[in-house]
Image 1 (cartoon, rainbow, N blue to C red):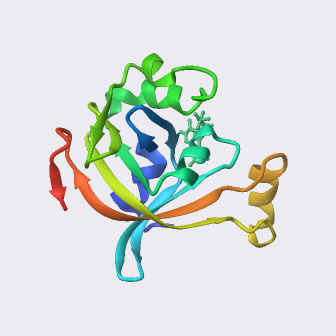
Image 2: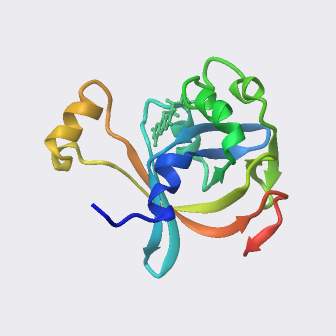
Length: 166
Ligand SMILES: Cc1cc2nc3c(=O)[nH]c(=O)nc-3n(C[C@H](O)[C@H](O)[C@H](O)COP(=O)(O)O)c2cc1C
């Protein structure tokens, strides 16, 4: 495929943190699967979170989530947040990132370059019978398939948590 843009590589190469909850009770994890686009005439971001992740609990019980993007210098922090579980440790403290409240009661990180604040408008477990057989074998031989969350992008924040789009 020759068609390639920054948008297509945004999640896959840059990675992001998806975070749900409030500052005193949240969890975050690294994601590299996701997308942005339009549905029902709304600007949306879609993420995929396996039910086994601790973050899944927070995605289920909260109406909002954030997607935070970082510069390359924070790659190690994202690796840690994508390999340790918030169930077992204070992984945010271990990562060196600083969680901060944003957009009223949501959570992002002081070090984030850009944060999308999303209102969850659709959630559905992927239907294993509709997943291509090779992906089924690779990703779901021992774990339940991802839940797809579509979030309406209600605001975009810059690195100082200032609204770029509201
Ligand atoms: C680069 C990278 C990308 C990841 N992308 C996803 C993803 O898109 N969806 C997912 O469910 N897990 C993904 N993970 C795995 C979770 O981040 C990882 O299991 C994490 O430790 C879960 O933390 P939690 O239990 O605190 O929620 C990714 C991990 C890494 C390192």
